Image 1 (cartoon, rainbow, N blue to C red):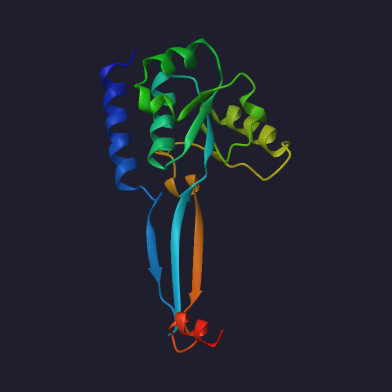
Image 2: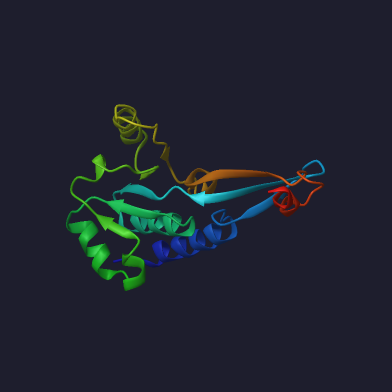
Length: 170
Protein backbone atom coordinates (compact mmCIF):
# COMPACT_ATOMS: atom_id res chain seq x y z
CA UNK A 1 0.00 0.00 0.00
CA UNK A 2 2.77 2.48 0.95
CA UNK A 3 6.37 2.10 -0.21
CA UNK A 4 9.46 2.88 1.92
CA UNK A 5 9.79 6.42 0.53
CA UNK A 6 6.14 7.16 1.31
CA UNK A 7 6.55 5.75 4.80
CA UNK A 8 9.64 7.90 5.45
CA UNK A 9 7.81 10.96 4.09
CA UNK A 10 4.87 10.39 6.43
CA UNK A 11 7.14 9.93 9.46
CA UNK A 12 8.81 13.27 8.65
CA UNK A 13 5.42 14.96 8.31
CA UNK A 14 4.22 13.50 11.62
CA UNK A 15 7.32 14.86 13.38
CA UNK A 16 6.84 18.27 11.74
CA UNK A 17 3.15 18.40 12.75
CA UNK A 18 4.05 17.47 16.29
CA UNK A 19 6.72 20.18 16.50
CA UNK A 20 4.53 22.92 15.00
CA UNK A 21 1.22 22.07 16.70
CA UNK A 22 -0.84 25.13 17.66
CA UNK A 23 -4.21 23.66 18.67
CA UNK A 24 -4.69 23.92 22.41
CA UNK A 25 -1.83 26.40 22.86
CA UNK A 26 -2.59 29.34 25.19
CA UNK A 27 -0.36 32.38 25.44
CA UNK A 28 -0.51 35.13 28.05
CA UNK A 29 -0.34 38.53 26.36
CA UNK A 30 1.01 41.76 27.82
CA UNK A 31 -1.68 43.84 29.46
CA UNK A 32 -1.98 46.97 31.56
CA UNK A 33 -2.56 46.66 35.29
CA UNK A 34 -6.05 45.37 35.95
CA UNK A 35 -6.39 43.45 32.72
CA UNK A 36 -5.66 39.83 31.80
CA UNK A 37 -5.20 39.16 28.07
CA UNK A 38 -4.65 35.78 26.46
CA UNK A 39 -4.46 34.22 23.02
CA UNK A 40 -5.37 30.63 22.31
CA UNK A 41 -5.74 28.51 19.22
CA UNK A 42 -8.74 26.25 18.61
CA UNK A 43 -9.37 23.75 15.79
CA UNK A 44 -11.46 24.80 12.80
CA UNK A 45 -13.63 21.72 13.40
CA UNK A 46 -14.11 19.95 10.09
CA UNK A 47 -11.67 20.13 7.19
CA UNK A 48 -11.93 18.35 3.83
CA UNK A 49 -9.23 16.47 1.98
CA UNK A 50 -8.55 15.87 -1.71
CA UNK A 51 -5.48 13.89 -2.77
CA UNK A 52 -4.76 11.43 -5.57
CA UNK A 53 -2.48 9.13 -3.56
CA UNK A 54 -2.72 7.16 -0.33
CA UNK A 55 0.37 8.95 1.02
CA UNK A 56 -1.28 12.30 0.23
CA UNK A 57 -4.48 11.27 2.01
CA UNK A 58 -2.58 10.06 5.06
CA UNK A 59 -0.60 13.30 5.13
CA UNK A 60 -3.91 15.21 5.18
CA UNK A 61 -5.21 12.98 7.94
CA UNK A 62 -2.07 13.61 10.01
CA UNK A 63 -2.35 17.39 9.52
CA UNK A 64 -6.04 17.38 10.47
CA UNK A 65 -5.57 15.27 13.58
CA UNK A 66 -2.45 17.17 14.72
CA UNK A 67 -4.46 20.40 14.64
CA UNK A 68 -7.39 18.88 16.53
CA UNK A 69 -9.71 18.79 13.53
CA UNK A 70 -11.83 16.08 11.96
CA UNK A 71 -11.56 15.39 8.23
CA UNK A 72 -14.06 14.46 5.53
CA UNK A 73 -13.17 12.64 2.32
CA UNK A 74 -15.24 11.58 -0.67
CA UNK A 75 -16.96 8.23 -0.18
CA UNK A 76 -15.31 6.15 -2.89
CA UNK A 77 -13.37 2.89 -3.10
CA UNK A 78 -9.93 4.44 -2.47
CA UNK A 79 -11.06 6.36 0.61
CA UNK A 80 -13.11 3.41 1.87
CA UNK A 81 -10.01 1.16 1.72
CA UNK A 82 -8.01 3.74 3.66
CA UNK A 83 -10.80 4.17 6.21
CA UNK A 84 -11.08 0.42 6.74
CA UNK A 85 -7.31 0.21 7.42
CA UNK A 86 -7.36 2.91 10.11
CA UNK A 87 -7.40 2.06 13.83
CA UNK A 88 -10.74 2.59 15.60
CA UNK A 89 -9.84 5.79 17.49
CA UNK A 90 -8.60 7.44 14.27
CA UNK A 91 -11.75 6.44 12.39
CA UNK A 92 -13.79 8.57 14.78
CA UNK A 93 -12.15 11.69 13.30
CA UNK A 94 -12.75 10.65 9.68
CA UNK A 95 -15.99 10.97 7.72
CA UNK A 96 -16.67 9.57 4.27
CA UNK A 97 -19.49 11.35 2.46
CA UNK A 98 -20.53 11.22 -1.19
CA UNK A 99 -21.84 14.79 -0.85
CA UNK A 100 -18.86 16.11 1.13
CA UNK A 101 -18.59 19.30 -0.96
CA UNK A 102 -21.90 20.48 0.50
CA UNK A 103 -20.70 20.15 4.10
CA UNK A 104 -19.62 23.22 6.09
CA UNK A 105 -15.88 22.48 6.30
CA UNK A 106 -13.40 25.15 7.38
CA UNK A 107 -10.52 24.42 4.99
CA UNK A 108 -9.71 22.18 2.03
CA UNK A 109 -6.44 20.28 2.23
CA UNK A 110 -5.43 19.73 -1.38
CA UNK A 111 -2.58 17.70 -2.87
CA UNK A 112 -2.52 17.90 -6.67
CA UNK A 113 -1.49 19.95 -9.67
CA UNK A 114 -1.55 23.74 -9.95
CA UNK A 115 -4.35 23.58 -12.54
CA UNK A 116 -6.45 21.36 -10.27
CA UNK A 117 -5.81 23.70 -7.33
CA UNK A 118 -6.98 26.67 -9.41
CA UNK A 119 -10.16 24.80 -10.37
CA UNK A 120 -10.82 24.01 -6.69
CA UNK A 121 -10.31 27.65 -5.73
CA UNK A 122 -13.02 28.64 -8.22
CA UNK A 123 -15.36 25.98 -6.81
CA UNK A 124 -14.69 27.06 -3.24
CA UNK A 125 -15.26 30.73 -4.09
CA UNK A 126 -18.66 29.87 -5.61
CA UNK A 127 -19.87 28.28 -2.35
CA UNK A 128 -22.32 30.06 -0.09
CA UNK A 129 -21.06 31.09 3.32
CA UNK A 130 -17.61 32.03 4.55
CA UNK A 131 -14.55 31.84 2.31
CA UNK A 132 -12.87 28.46 2.62
CA UNK A 133 -9.09 28.44 2.22
CA UNK A 134 -7.38 25.85 0.01
CA UNK A 135 -4.21 24.62 1.72
CA UNK A 136 -1.41 22.85 -0.11
CA UNK A 137 1.56 21.04 1.43
CA UNK A 138 4.87 22.77 1.22
CA UNK A 139 6.07 20.24 2.45
CA UNK A 140 3.60 20.30 5.34
CA UNK A 141 0.25 22.03 5.66
CA UNK A 142 0.47 25.38 7.46
CA UNK A 143 -0.72 24.66 11.03
CA UNK A 144 -1.71 28.32 11.55
CA UNK A 145 -4.34 27.98 8.83
CA UNK A 146 -5.86 24.88 10.44
CA UNK A 147 -6.86 26.71 13.63
CA UNK A 148 -8.78 29.82 14.67
CA UNK A 149 -7.34 32.41 17.02
CA UNK A 150 -9.31 33.31 20.13
CA UNK A 151 -8.38 36.29 22.28
CA UNK A 152 -9.83 36.98 25.70
CA UNK A 153 -9.48 40.16 27.71
CA UNK A 154 -10.65 40.20 31.30
CA UNK A 155 -10.93 43.45 33.20
CA UNK A 156 -9.83 42.71 36.77
CA UNK A 157 -9.57 46.38 37.79
CA UNK A 158 -13.16 46.61 39.05
CA UNK A 159 -13.25 47.08 42.83
CA UNK A 160 -9.46 47.38 43.10
CA UNK A 161 -8.66 44.24 41.16
CA UNK A 162 -10.93 41.96 43.17
CA UNK A 163 -14.17 41.38 41.29
CA UNK A 164 -15.71 39.53 44.26
CA UNK A 165 -15.76 42.82 46.21
CA UNK A 166 -18.34 44.16 43.75
CA UNK A 167 -20.87 41.68 45.16
CA UNK A 168 -20.59 43.19 48.67
CA UNK A 169 -22.84 46.15 47.83
CA UNK A 170 -25.67 43.93 46.56
